[in-house]
Image (cartoon, rainbow, N blue to C red; front, side, top):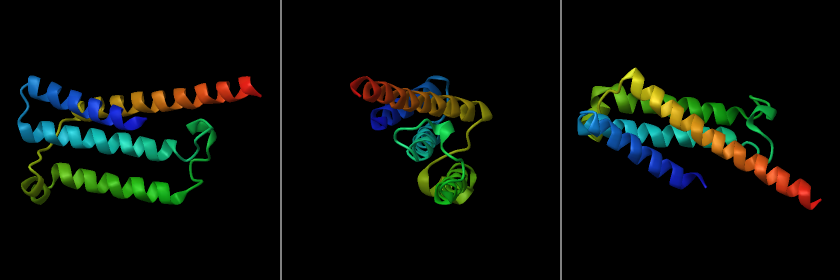
Length: 127
């Protein structure tokens, strides 16, 4: 369910950045970071396919935190280190762009949590 959200949101923020005058490399960095942020939200969300995110013990699976932390470091390197910028054609992004990326990821999380709640209601109504 989340794949169409990834692509649409990444493309939307990519186009928005270009419309605001960002260089292609910066818009590319924003789009990639949207994908990674949404996938990170999805990773935490999938710790339970039926219970809300806040009902799952935060450290019930330390591998999730290890994966998310590693991905964060790689994402920051991809965005801010010159060597990665040269290889991938990326550029640093602003704090405002990070805010937009986080807002999109939180919106996707809300959609995923809404889907879980809807499925729980459907399951209860059948019982």
